[in-house]
Length: 128
Image 1 (cartoon, one colour):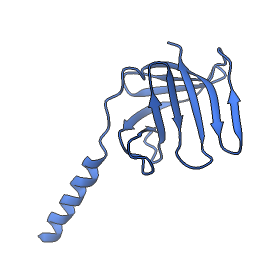
Image 2 (cartoon, rainbow, N blue to C red):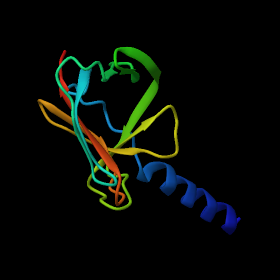
Image 3 (cartoon, rainbow, N blue to C red):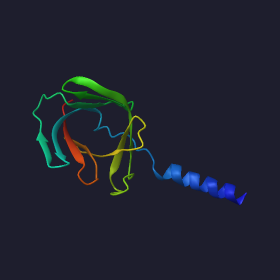
Image 4 (cartoon, rainbow, N blue to C red):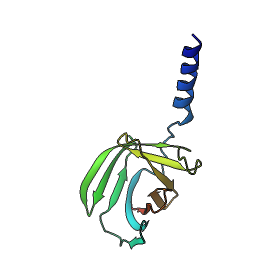
């Protein structure tokens, strides 16, 4: 009986410690890539109208376009404070992946990247 109680307690802690956050209304819309940096000296700037777009919808679905062509779509969710290196950062997960990316958002800029050394960070600006 004691093992059962301990197992139930651990399961409860695991499932309640990383809660999904509400989708920020500021995230909803279309975001176009403007800058990518990191990796092995990777630093690229993208002009307006380049067609590299994330579209986030209120029903937790997304579409990813590369040069205007749809390359990926599915579901996403965000967890607050779920980054093991920087616990205060939010993490976005696409299509039930076990691996997420750090996400930061303000009124005009969206950054999706990683805290891992030599990882790439992508900066987007809101277009709609």
